[in-house]
Length: 436
Ligand code: S3P
Image 1 (cartoon, rainbow, N blue to C red):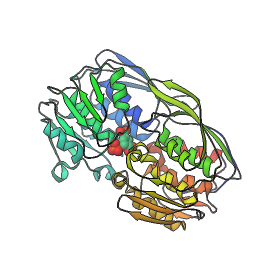
Image 2: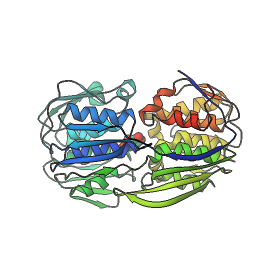
Image 3: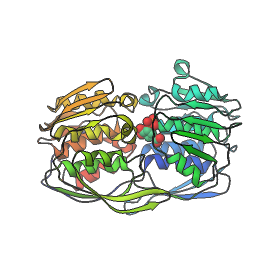
Image 4: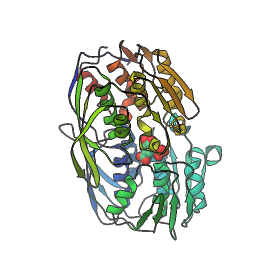
């Protein structure tokens, strides 16, 4: 059912960011492969994507128990590791739903096992590029087929024995990097990977905590085959979910929001650097460390932003936040130019086309480019009825646009927010923004 969001008179209060999606996927997968016991994972992401990972590893024979969380905290899970060679052949096709992270990381785990597995997902997932993981896995010796020559899911993994490789990544993708690191755990020989730019490093951090022999030299990672030791993990809050509230608090004319428990790992925190560059009143409060990841509370207040150039190495550090950054850019004084973000075209939707389409409909001066967009800010955001093209981050960006715009915004397909943040619309309602 559609929802309509209008700007409340004020936006004040506290929000607890839900558990990080990227860290949650990895906490399940890596502990499933560990050989020393049972891990406890707390504040697990409530989104459907991470449930896809849980279900896939259960289907592969891993014992995972899940308990609902209380008081705004995410669920708690226990995962009993089966060791690097302990996964069982599943009785059916493995369904990753909408989750690119599940698909690409699990591909690195399934490659080169002596079991046959088929990995698929929803229509969006089946249109996303998989050649980027299949090509290097084949180079390592994996036998994989799939639609369109193995470039699209469903993908079929037949086994084969893996050998270490030296690979220059064509894109700064944490999913590709993590896929190859996971494959390298069981390969014969060393795997070395060179990244074109830094991307989120949660796999590397968790590997270090689990005793994996991984060395980092600038953008090069060198991995020796290693066993994993079980670790308990408290998942930090998801900065990609928190970003919606940071931008709402900054762009609303009468606002002060404290977003609590936000993971500020430097490979994820590009949004904080960018908003400060744009002139936002944003402070990090109570910086601390949770399970090897830096965490803080983020305090934001109404601010007049200025346009910026967003390009280069910062792009992978805020890639998922660009649809909501576009909302901030529309209200900033001057021009915001986003470049080097062609990856947006192959996310859950083509996020350049989808963002530009609703923004034009809301009267914003915006032009799509091959690898980004140019937003002439300083105007207002008009109202209208828009669709998110089944993309959770588009749906929530539209919700935030409604909270800060002059006229109400109707989101035709809001439920897709549940992919990463099922509590999102409830929070919009709590702030008085839900009018229909
Ligand atoms: C993710 C990596 C990013 C990001 C995605 C989650 C991860 O994708 O967009 O939402 O958990 O590794 P790419 O690595 O493909 O850029």
